Amino acid sequence: MDTFEYLYGACGAPDQRLRYTSAVQAFEKQYGKSEELRIFSAPGRTEVCGNHTDHNRGCVLAAAVNLDVIAVVRPETNGVIRVKSLGFPEDVIDTADLAVRESEKNTSAALIRGVAAGFAERGHNICGFTAYTTSNVLKGSGLSSSAAFEVLIGTILSGLCNDGSVSPVEIAQIAQYAENKYFGKPSGLMDQMASSVGGFVTIDFADTSAPVIESIPFDIAGYDLCIVDTRADHANLTPEYAAIPAEMKAVADFFGKTELRDITKKDIYDNIRTLRKECGDRAVSRAFHFFDENERVLRAAAALRRKDTQAFLDTINESGSSSFKYLQNVFAPGDPRLEAVVIALYAAQDVLAGRGASRVHGGGFAGTIQAFVPQELTERFTSVMESIFGERSCYNLRIRPVGGIEIK
Image 1 (cartoon, rainbow, N blue to C red):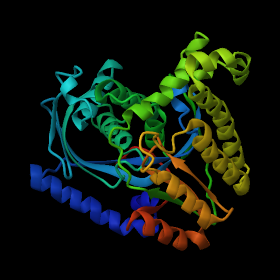
Image 2 (image 1 turned 90 degrees about the horizontal axis):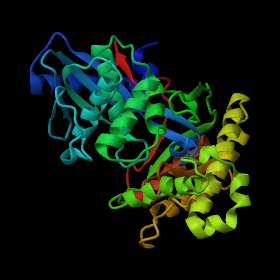
Image 3 (image 1 turned 90 degrees about the vertical axis):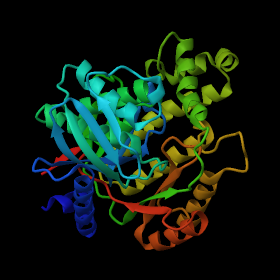
Image 4 (image 1 turned 180 degrees about the horizontal axis):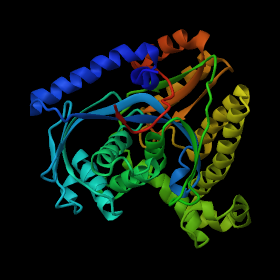
């Protein structure tokens, strides 16, 4: 099969060929022609089940999608990494200096430096390169554009400096390290792992040094995967995101553990009065969500294996309900005027009328919802969502079968 059809589908392949050609032309305009150009790609991801479980070593069901970051790359011998991303200033990183820089926190330069540092600390080769990148992974969409970028840098370093020998799992771990230590965001490992490994995957993070990953081939026949971008403002929401793992870990800490994976739901029930006083009701509620969500991931994966679409959809709806009621990440409590995700979920359920599934997508509070929509309702679903949130706010995606790769 043609590479572009494999990655983007027959309908998307022609536009993608033009996109890649344009990226090469943009590289040459920026840096001059070269006979050594190589091309890399890393996808965004969709979380299917396992909302806010990864940071407590839980289970997730996720998938790579057909939106990606691509890079046109020229190897360099001077040890300097230059990355020019469409619409952004060039980042220049000298691999001789890979120390954390506070001034780079929350920037793409921090991610590049952090990934290079992660490679070096694990004993892998690092080298210089010049790259031009362009992305169609929607920022703030819950599709994890930052993880795609991190995995892209890791895939480039693996391909250019290590003959492609660094595994997708290790690239994901290095990408998370870069985001946590250099970028300054306390993310879990799911985003990077789904982007790096690709396909439909379950990931059990009980042992984060060796997560158990299973690929599940499955085509949800008759349904479209729709992501709705509510275009809500993510500004100042970092404390809301950070509070979720912090509160879950506070419950674990009560038992002398670091993550909820090391205790049981029975432990909570047996100590619930003291826990409520010491950790607060929301922390206990979020812990309950964690345990039940882990079980839902297992049930959803089992449904996919036996090709039981309805059982799968029922489980996804349960996940969405738990996120709303117990995880409480559908809206931030600070401003009741801004609850775009609530409106999107209501509209989705109104259109679906008991069919398909819908849930908050990604970190929550603002951003996106995910829906599995019967194909005969997709046109109406899209029309309703775009009447609320604007043109091109509803995206019909497909699952990408591979993660970060070099295009050859």
